[in-house]
Image (cartoon, rainbow, N blue to C red; front, side):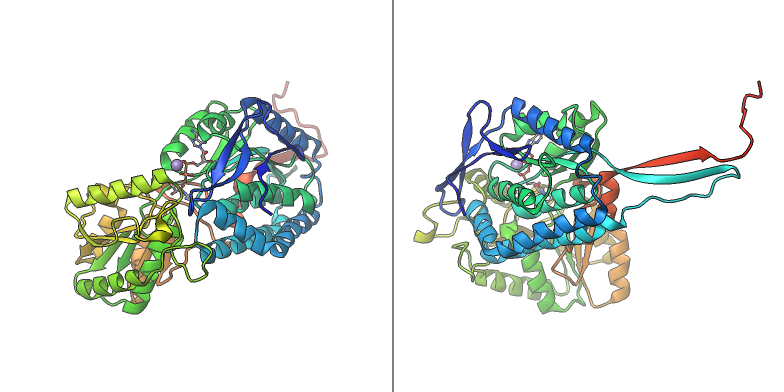
Length: 492
Ligand code: NAD
Ligand code: MN
């Protein structure tokens, strides 16, 4: 299924960039080149936006009965199910993530299409009571042409989170995947076509974020930008989109707290905290990267946590026993190592990791060991800045109010995990943390149907849920006068 080269998908046609330019995408686990990818120019972006605009204006997608749109979304999911192993393979090759993680994410992408397939038929307006002689109804119309820009950490899942609700709402799409991981998004574009999404409704363009991503974010032909990525990129996108007041939704970075109280089930808390940070090689927006541990169980917890971290198998992403796969790029490996060194300078103690794993298996590609920094305080840069790698910082706490204060003392507000057997405390803390997603004694944060998104500088808007459809529609209020006598409000 891996091709030597991939083209742009514009108006249902595969094409090279009009400049003929390409770039190479790599396998992060080996550093070897995987495929040549078309590098879109601004003219290609113009063409893709024009195709999406034309497809929108003809209404060839939005005017399908909702149930038919739902059927086609289900068909996309069905094709993905049939090609599950191939899609997982492509995802692992291009991202270096562990097979087990890729499987879960491709499955979630499928379930996301299935969720929105059902949701299409729930879209409807209201009839709102108005004064005598008047009649009102509301319509939910597609917001229009959507530019969707996604990151490299969950390539297939992010593409699904973007495309599925947009299609459910009747919108048309220009999707731009990250240059590090473009393959599965391009394949998904083809699957949409094959499933019966009309030409021009889903366009996929690949190329530099700084050039064509930013151009897309300010393109006058785009009505809405849905972006997932770094907070700094999100701010740039918002500025650009403001020129024509586009609708903007942003899913950005995080530095999520993971709070272990002294009455927690210790085994569950250790295992869940381990998964919370080292899943996906720590390259998750919702990574629970600040681990707050109550002083009464601190030494016991930390000892077990380190012991279990040592059991995590780092290595060949295709080995089904691997827990922690490769790091996405040499640059990211450098960033991670830089943060670990910074943490040590700031006074942290290294309990495990702190380097590339050793041995022949790691002579190529990009790697970093699961890394645990203790004796950290919440004001250190390693506790405040998103590292986006397998690095957790441990902070000791003694008091509920104080840990809530520290948990909220961050520019981010994406997720928070709480470990306790005291349900009143669990709900009290859940209410007090400023985060869009709260996990109580749960290692998992997202299922299709549950709103996913952040407070503060983690972004705004929620994905993955029914309410997401509000962000892909405009509400039109239609007011009519139905009285018998004509109205003459000026009385002239
Ligand atoms: P990034 O911001 O570097 O890039 C994301 C996308 O934006 C890429 O497609 C890139 O090409 C493009 N881009 C880059 N500069 C641009 C610009 N000026 N204008 C328009 N587009 C531009 O993010 P990344 O490094 O790919 O991903 C990691 C980040 O994503 C982390 O901060 C992580 O927390 C975040 N993330 C958030 C969520 C969430 O749901 N909140 C989910 C996954 C990842
Ligand atoms: Mn980046």
